[in-house]
Image (cartoon, rainbow, N blue to C red; front, side, top):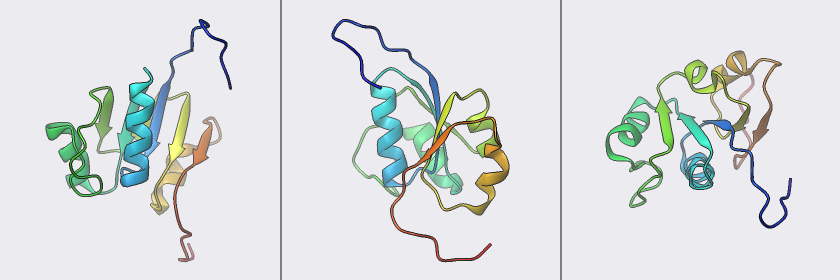
Length: 116
């Protein structure tokens, strides 16, 4: 989607599932562009680090994160009300929260070789 100069962008709620280095950078950039961003990770210490210190010392040390990123300990709560989502995690439990009513794109490196 592209916008002409002077045209206003629509700001939407975007859920990012996975707060590794890729997911955290994506969430940070989306928040910098004025979107309402929620982020979840299956490591509770990462979620708490983002909430308390506005940083992700485990996966992205030294970067102060945008205050528009709201971390959630639950994937279901993270995606509630989101118009769009970014999947940046290998967590097997995510699929049950996504459902058919959401639009998601995958943004992760590598391939999970585990079979369900």
